[in-house]
Image (cartoon, rainbow, N blue to C red; front, top):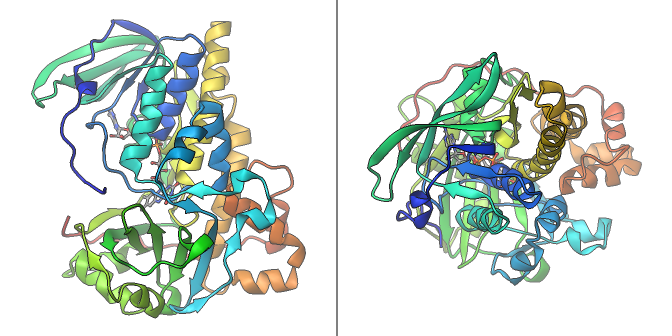
Length: 437
Ligand SMILES: Cc1cc2nc3c(=O)[nH]c(=O)nc-3n(C[C@H](O)[C@H](O)[C@H](O)COP(=O)(O)OP(=O)(O)OC[C@H]3O[C@@H](n4cnc5c(N)ncnc54)[C@H](O)[C@@H]3O)c2cc1C
């Protein structure tokens, strides 16, 4: 069931010690992964989450490579037993109605990892957090980290505002740790404070999304497929993510000034774009909207630095590209593995330097770059994947590798050497205020 508000839970009543090996800021997939893996290795870990748990979050479509971190976390059996719809493919629609053949992941790799899931993030993220707790991490919700503590330019803990389950502020506390891991997601807590955050001028996008009940789904294996539907004229695209209980998440993304024009509500803009997407109109013919409209914008950025003395970034707190290829949760989980391994080694060596805590950066960045270049190609008006594959059929497997998230595989980037330096145009950063929910 999709819900945007949840009652307070027992996670906000947890007692807290004065000192931990690791404090993790944020209880999303990145924070929960780091917390679980480090606690499993015997380190004392405190995860501080400012929201309630469970909490509503955008980002419901997983991609196949999430299988491996989920396996390491020990969560595959729970996911297999869950009612989350199974996803076997992704299908593209161009110009509002031209449907391409689906990319079936198992045709590329018959391993069971080629089937993944469409998840309500409230439940999925809670599953990850409960797993971290089961492995020994301490979690406290309604705990807003306000600042980091520093000594001789080394981060040595956090200052946090704690509230109890009724939401009343109880106190502001200083808690010390050997390492602070920032997994604060799109608020990019540390990189914003340290002025390390850089927006991507080629991807100044905004999104309006909502949920429908009763939308038309394809049959059989295609029932849980993600659809990426470009509107006529390619100025925006819709995601179509089938969830449980006959609900579908449908979001529209385009350049910010186009998505949030002055004098127009998100609902009006959403309907304007729906008019340009006959393939989606057909699917919504008998559907009813069952949630408000949500908006988000200007979410494409990266941090210039991944770590410093006593601190490290992970997941969206380090960077986020774009929703189009559903890369976010994979990078949060995969980044969580990289960071947990680096922090473990740093703690064992008693060397909490920037070099130790950020040792994963070059490998991780190279993988992320494969997603970024595919995203740039998607938003480049004159570039067509179909044409590229007609001329270079030998690169189809590289393309599917990136779509499945196998971006760390050696050789994947060769496709981009042939594609050349394809980039969309810079988007002017004018930002008329959005209205609505
Ligand atoms: C429009 C859109 C659509 C998307 N669709 C998809 C998709 O289909 N599939 C996909 O894989 N990804 C998708 N993503 C990306 C995905 O949602 C994120 O990449 C993912 O949630 C990152 O996980 P995280 O753990 O890094 O951060 P988050 O999940 O954002 O978690 C961060 C947590 O930190 C907490 N926090 C923040 N600041 C503080 C603080 N000061 N103190 C304490 N706690 C704090 C927040 O409350 C939050 O719970 C989408 C993103 C956008 C913008």
